[in-house]
Length: 225
Image (cartoon, rainbow, N blue to C red):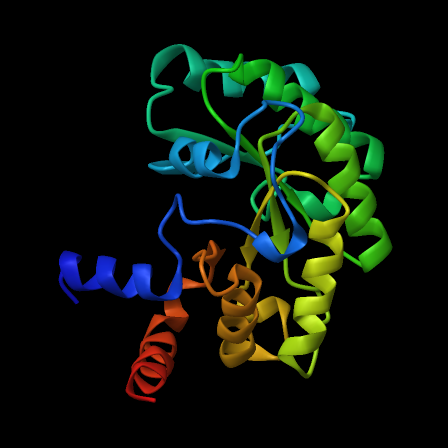
């Protein structure tokens, strides 16, 4: 697949960085930054830098280390880069609620307002909603919301989970639809992301690269109908 074809494909399914974000949840302004959804979309273009989460020798979260890691990028190359914390590589499932919120706050402080910060949230519905609300208080620019970890047999189930979590905050929400997190698979991922975007706004989603051939086939079938 050539670069141009790949970019057209990504635009078709709403995966290009800088697309948006759970509009059906009624997102408008981010209280932490004052950005509108359009401004947030523009700000999140470019590279999304998924940071690992540092820990101290005793297993405690290294808050100062995370702050320094984010500040390193903010001081050197903040243009066209978004910092993403507490996702898969960021030990999301190793953090308790207090650590998760502390990580978001440290990332915001390290970014110094020079680059957007996205924080990952996932787990059971109640836990994920609490994570989302805590993250909003830290001033992160948007959330990376993962599909429910034990899946759903229907697109409606995944959509309701994501919609209700997104509706609990007033900020942008990126959806992460890796099929490994959902028994509903690729078809549900596309249906859910498409429905979340609504009729006038393309959603932002993320899927595993190895599933691209299956996604392409589904996109082609949808385009022919």
